[in-house]
Image (cartoon, rainbow, N blue to C red):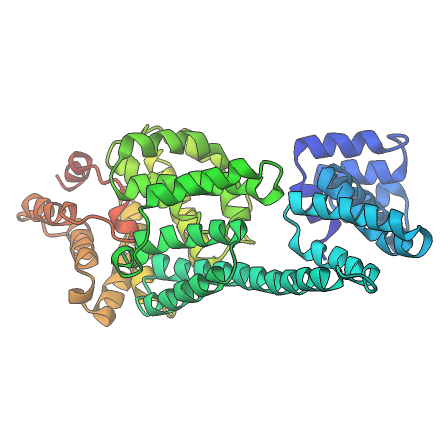
Length: 477
């Protein structure tokens, strides 16, 4: 379980205000403890202020934890929660009410659960409806409904598991450049297709749509013809129609943001930049939420790569300051490793754009501490090249030279022919760090021309950094 301090630090300002108002008196010890934790005061100092023994302090922290949890649960109440609370009392209804009343109540619950598409809960209702109709002709009907919903619930769980696993492997494929993952992703795609084909389920259709669009856009473009798929625009239109048909569905209320993001990726892939920019403006402030909450349904960290690509092409506002503030209260620790890699690189390049080279280096060093690149020399070389270049721009010759030596060693291990853009980037860094003056400008210009000929494929950080040719040439003059 999370420590109460971590929970309090993760609360929004609105929740902090609400919990503070819920205390009987602001001078009570539990209220003082909460205020101190909000201010991130040290435990020893709080214990001394409240004049509590170690055991009493531990008990007070436990009481506060329960109070915070109860507040958060209360905020989550909804019409759906009311239906579920009635479902908890279903045994009392069966044993205390007349059969006619019990049947009427169960039929009403059935309608409400269907409205909210709560398949697992429907199995409970059908189990009792089956029992209540044991001596009637409807017994077989409710037995069939029960069996069907049990099977559907298991299939839906399996579909959700496949979806989450697909995007976990996709993150490794996209970020780490693991080409062996392509076959695994295709197997998962076909398994998801088979599971979803078993039922006429709008939920499964929506899940499969998210997987299908990503697979066809970024893994296997030939899938459109091989599987005889509809165009992406038609699939997204059907998803929107599904959302409109189930306006009270709790999951769909959140998945609308997911499919807005997927539209962004679709427009960016097909270079429809006007629409891509419009959607990015709409979802930009929700990107932290995408990264934290939607990894089981997609690979949302890819949106940060899209932003860098649009900036590099001069297609969106070049002002880095909004992006510096975007993640002001964001914590990456619960995200996947591929998402962490993209996040740290994005933060570093945003600081680089703002000419805050010290912080840019800091983000890359944090990335090295957070993620192990032992099994991925190519990505390690990408990061090492960025560090070398930023340290050069920062005029830290010693660290730039040391990092260059390390980059050259990694390049020899990989082989220059396997990573041509990185071989050119390392050559450019070697020219910058060289003491030889002869033809330095011409050599540097040549390497930059070669580098500019490359376009990013998947995640290649060295092709996402904006290099100012004029400013760089001034450094060698």
